[in-house]
Amino acid sequence: MEGTNPVNKKLAAALSGGAVLVLALSGCGSDNNNDKLNSWAKQVCDAVQPQATKIEAANAAIQKETSDNSKPENVQKTDAKAFQDMSDAYKAIGAAVDKAGAPNVDNGETKQTNAVKELNGISTSYADLKKQVDELDTKDQAKFADGLKDIATQLDKLSQSGNDALKTLEEGDVGKAMAQQESCKSASASPAGTKS
Image (cartoon, rainbow, N blue to C red; front, side, top):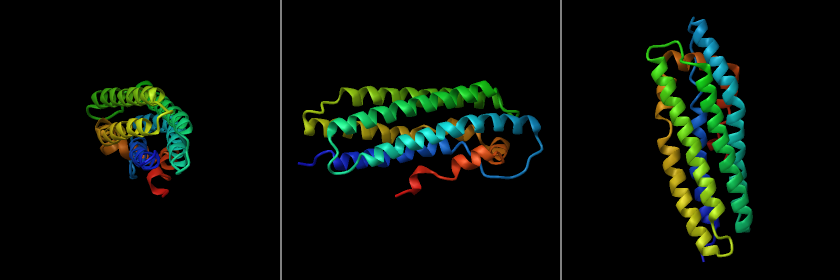
């Protein structure tokens, strides 16, 4: 019998893709002399940093619970908490971008609206995954493994699809301004995918 271990590993791999999403919110350096934009970037980066940490911790918890001898009950509990944390974190990032207002760039308002909508959508998706994990049958190892497989597939899609509006938000000057913020630098310094 396959057990839950290979599935857990697949789940962990899919998750590390999702963490990249929030770390995408840190651009790649260069000066600009736009005080309004710098102030916007600081506000967003300062709010993003603790959420990026929360998402990384949730990833790490799932990675840790992927050993061969993990009981389905433990996997379920860990995954459910991790998905809830991620849902909360993305919602908080969405709220931060919303609160910061539109960045002082061309189409700033559209970029901001789309990014907030996307972040809230990701938050909802993680909340749905939490519900699914909660409903898995931990008494039946094979059914549990199948349920986890479905969740891993959805997670994979989520980690691949979710960052178009974020990329658009941080193009050009916005990305440059964010790259100068200490809090964004530290958020991007340790992407979850590099610890293997």
